[in-house]
Amino acid sequence: MATQEWFFERWAGTILRWIMAYIFVFGVVLTLSGVLSLNIVSLVQGVILLAPYLIIRYRDPDSTTIPFRGYIS
Image (cartoon, rainbow, N blue to C red; front, side):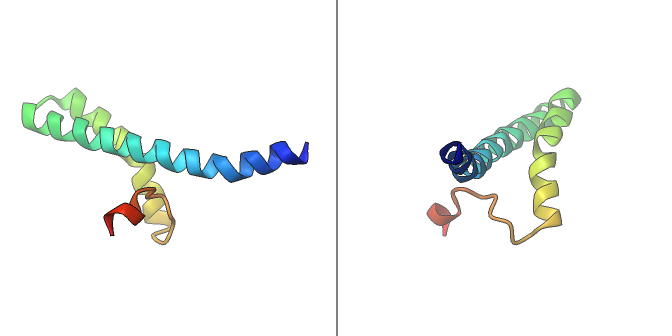
């Protein structure tokens, strides 16, 4: 049982960061396409996808929710 808890604690945060990053990238693409095509539905969907990531970053600016930060800098 302890092994399963360790596995969950080890990988849950990593997997969540990657999922959030890909949702953020998809949200950026969707928002930009909504702005360029003047499609309000696409724009709103993109903003909804961006919101969780931006809320986490706003509440804790030092959080490590950017999984590819090491590749960028």
